[in-house]
Image (cartoon, rainbow, N blue to C red; front, top):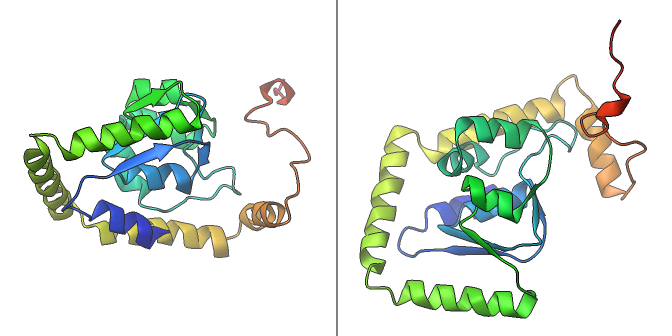
Length: 195
């Protein structure tokens, strides 16, 4: 998945569009953030965090992509609170560019129109030059390889560290086992308040 995200990020000779027709979580969200423009159906729910997968740190260049779209405070809330976000709210904070209240086929038709308008835009060449300059500036500031190495180093702690919660969550995910309880970060009324 990292290789795919990297290929999209470094594809500087074209402009790319992500079109989300269904819900996306973790890597699916960050895969879409690799594109230059992101659109979603209004009914789409995004879960831009890895924490529910056994407190996983995550990868897919999220530490590079997310701060390019939202403020540091929003990024911390999105990744730390483990709560989903609707397409309207994602648009409001800049996580995605726009969302449409359309059925699947009309949504695909709308995305086709957007792509054709972009491809035929008189500003296409300048948009491409701006993208190339920004990518080079980003690479000079901190190479993509450094983001990848840092994320994978944190992921290694998930795999081989002292906390077994990742392995339990992976087992439940692979075997399609439902949660036995609502997580405390969602069921706040069940938290024990010390006296």
